[in-house]
Amino acid sequence: MEVLPRLADIRLDWELNGGGDQSPNEYMQPLLDSFEILKREFGHDDEAVAAIERQIEHVNVWVGERMPEELDDDGGERRLGSVKTTDASNSGRSVFDDVDA
Image (cartoon, rainbow, N blue to C red; front, side, top):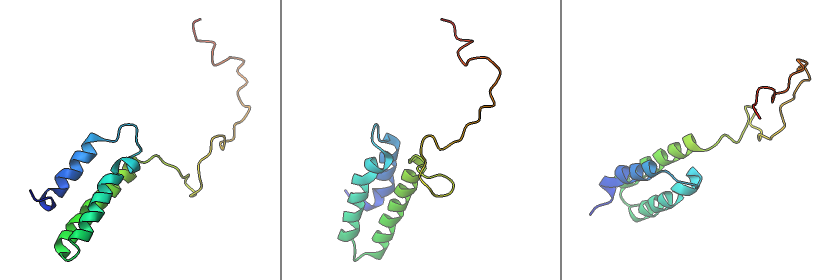
């Protein structure tokens, strides 16, 4: 069985199976490692290397779409408590007023 013609199918199988509790990056790393090995094996075949690199790019896009946002709009790291609150809530009601005990 030849692997190269099935690279897209193999990648799609991995994508469809998701990663469970793993981060998308951790989940896809073994597949990316396999693609890198294939690139070395077929390094003499420009067409094969291009096909493998296309699949690597697809994996990277898939991972990027599923990774949680870790940076704010200014490129800085997000941290809890960075939003300033105001004391404008003077309604006299508690957020728990409507909860039945």
